[in-house]
Length: 108
Image (tube, rainbow, N blue to C red; front, side):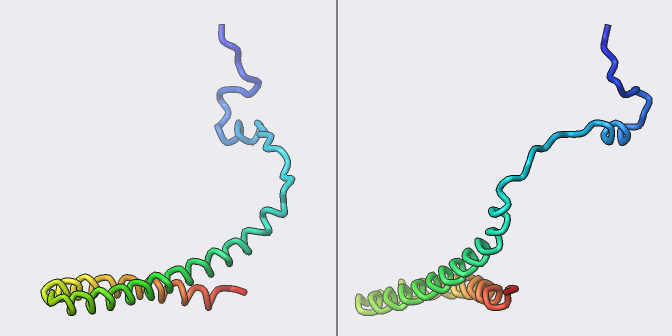
């Protein structure tokens, strides 16, 4: 024999959910919820500065590589590097522009 639950089987499920309370416990560490905004601000700042550094370093490495290849008479390699940089620069500048815009216009 099967045991029947105290709730009748002919009741709609929404009534069954209301009748069965779920104990979730207590929220004790409310301070953690307050630090979310501060954490988001620090993350935004670090991300914006990191992307600016990546853009600066990639541009510096590109120019150093072009100078070295030109000195070594590898103009064809310098031309292929130009194609790669022309694809890379818009991506990085778009990320930097978006991160900086978000950083400077966020809610304070």
